[in-house]
Structures are given as structure tokens and as C-alpha cells.
Length: 303
Image 1: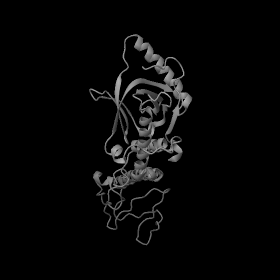
Image 2 (image 1 turned 45 degrees about the horizontal axis):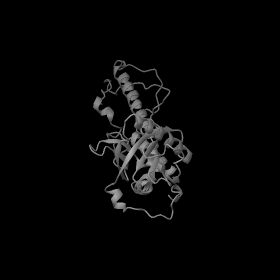
Image 3 (image 1 turned 45 degrees about the vertical axis):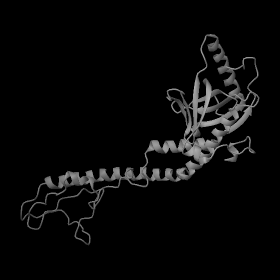
Image 4 (image 1 turned 120 degrees about the vertical axis):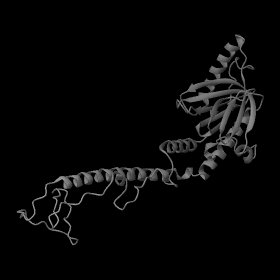
């Protein structure tokens, strides 16, 4: 994970792991808004976003609108943006979706991060104005990301590739079960044909050649030659099949077919597998922490 944090390597984390894993770290800030960006990382990308949102905020301020205040709750489960009074969650940014985080190294108030939206999959840049603790918030997000990644590995994320292989095997097993059901239906149709086939009168002589049998005196199965009903030696018709419709859901040994999606250790659905893949991809991309200069124009006064 050292490659993911290319800034402040000499800085130690500010909070205990328990504080971020079992609780959360709250911060108060002003929310300038968010805007779509075309890249998941980049200092110039966030600079343009900050300029755009600051300009929009100054226009709204001239119209008498105040910059809304929010509460940030940072933990290993993400960065929540809430209304400080009602505690309603406005945004919930999962850490594996946050790819870039930066603070203004000259202003000490402005910080921003880029997060991939869970619904649209677009990259959104969030910009905040804090009370001279932008760097602390940035480092807290970085520490939470580091802990979340370790927790992901400990909880089985390192076995995603193995899970993929298991999923492929499960799919193949399901296909075989489908083929098995189709073969059972074909056997059932053949049994019905055997039961309705005409039986020659008693004492009649069959002119058909004698069919060879196996060691159990059974006619070998052939995929080419259809099965021909053989009457019993006393001339009685063949016995009716005792197979009931309910037995068709069982295999040749009377056991229930194996269902790969109800077994205990491999009990996961495709949507869960998709989320695991997404989390692995996000954590592998890493989180870049940077210090940048955003105060480049006269609009950068206090919002």
C-alpha cells in the first residue's frame, strides 16, 4: 500500500485503528458541492473542479445563498456527508471508490477528493472548506483507506480469484444438471413408448433377429437404434414404470441433484461477486494523497 500514498510518508497516522474501525472521526466543514470530472486522479483535474465550484459558490453567495454546512464522518466504511442538524446522509462515499484526495497546502482550508459514483459510475470531485484542518482530514481519509484495504484482505478479498474459479465450476455444474434433466426427460419418453407399443400374441414366432444382451441379460443401450419392447416369457406385457413426477427431480440413485448455489461455503450470488471484483479493482488502484495550490485567483476568498 505504500505505492498508493505518494505523499507525507514521514507523517504518522493521527488516529487509532479502533477509532476508525469501530467508530468514526467527525469533522465539520462547508460543502462547496461536487462536479463531474473525466479522470479518477490528477492535480490539474481537481484544480479545475475547485475553480468551477468556487465560481458557482460566489455567484450563489451574491444572490444571498449561504454555503451549506455539513458533517463528515470518516471510518473504514467510507466518508459520509450528513446534515449536521438532522443527521440525514446526503452522500455516502465508499473508500474503495475514492481514488484521489488533496488539500490546499497554502490555504489550509480547502480539500477535495474524487469518488466514483455507485449508480452512474461517473467520477465526481467533492470540494470542502474546513477550519484550517484540510490536511488532517486528508490524512484521516488516507488512514481509513489503508485500514479498509487490510480489512478487505483479512475478510477474504485475497481469495477473489479463487472465488471466480469456484463460480465457473458452479456454472458448469448447473449446466450439467440441466443436461441431466433433459436426459431424464428423454428416458421418460422412451419408457412411455415402451408401455404403449403393441405386444405380439402368445405363441407367435418373432422373425426379428435375436438381439445380443450383456452379462446381466440386458439389451445394450444404443444412441442410434431405438429400444424395442421385449415381452416376458409368459407373454405378459411389460411392467408399467413406477417413476412418479416427483422422482424426476432426483438422480439415478434417488438423491436430490446438487445445487451449487445452496452449498454453505460457496454461498454467494453474482451481484456479491461483482461487488468483490469492484472492491478489489478500487483498492488495487490505490488512493493518492497530494498537497496542491488551489488559491490561484481572487475568487479564492473565504466562501
